[in-house]
Every structure is written in C-alpha cells, then in structure tokens.
Image (tube, rainbow, N blue to C red; front, side, top):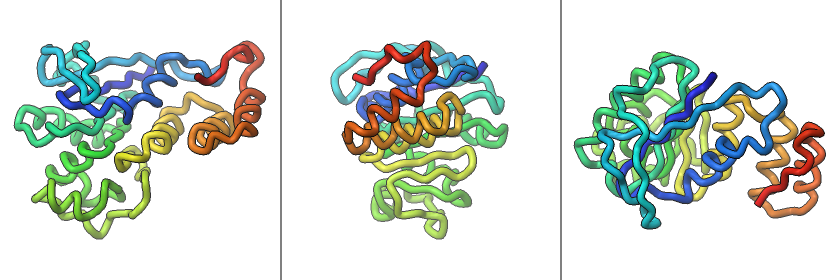
Length: 216
C-alpha cells in the first residue's frame, strides 16, 4: 500500500492539485495491478484551512504522523503563505522523506519554500522562474540545477511551475505507478490538448472492466 499525503495551508491553490487528487481518488484509469492508494491531508495542526478558491478543508493528520518510507508520497501545493514559520515542520519532514526514497511533488509557491531550505540546491528542478526563486527564496543556491521547463522530475523529486498542473500530475502518476504507460500517455495528451483522438486512445487503453469510465 502507498500513502499520498497532501499538505494543507491557507490560500492553497485549489487548481494545482485538482488533477492528481481526482485521479487518485476515483481510480478510474488505474491499471489492473495498481498498488493500493490511501490519500491523507496533513498540516501543522488540525485547524481547517481556507483555499484560494474559498473552500474549507480539514487536515486528516499532523506532520508527525507522516510515515517516512519509500511508499509515501508528499504533495506540496502552491500558496501565498509558505513564508510563515509554522510550515518549517513539513519542510524538515520533506528532507527526511527524500532521504528515505519517498516521492515529493512541489508546485508553484512550494518550490520557493523547498529552495529556501536547500532542498533544490543539488537536485534538478524548476519553478516560476529563477527571478521568482531569487525573490522569494533568499537562501536559494541551486541556480546550476535549474531547468527552464514547466515541470521537472529528478528521481523522487518532482517540481513544476504554476501553469503545469497537468504535466506535474503526469510525472507524479508515473512515479507512483498506478497507470499503464499507454494510458498515462493518452491521458496526458488528452487533458493537455483536448484532441478527441486521445480520448479514444485513452478509452482503448483501459482494462475491459473500466470501459464504462469517461473523463469529466
């Protein structure tokens, strides 16, 4: 079994995690032998947070409850509040998870938080631009490892800019291993282009028992 933790903080950018949470929760395109996935929301305390879109979300568990092993995945969404001191605990935990072989996904504002604690100093990564990191991560020294792409995967660390939610999701799904290769390719091309040909390719890639599933 694999556990996917989603970090909650005020002003969380709802849209950035929409694709990954929907696919992991629905399992509509999972392969037959996909590992069992448990999704948990996590935060510094159990106080409900308010997303950028105005939704109220209550954490399932605390940072201390995260299982530090290679079967864990931690997703860090963008937000305007990453600079607050109370989020240091999850960044310390991120170091521990990376060392244990867990998968870490950081997007938009979360990449600045990762940069500010040295996590991006020796790993290939991306963000909303080098100017963004220099502006919001004063301790950042990872310039030689910056890749000017929408999303970048460096082993178990996956980073993305604020426009790359679909590609970020693709890389995470690939790392977790819940889609067949051809399903994931068709899924990505359909949701990134809207080309109907990829819709049929996606449907044809699914096991017979999932033929009734359709993307919404």
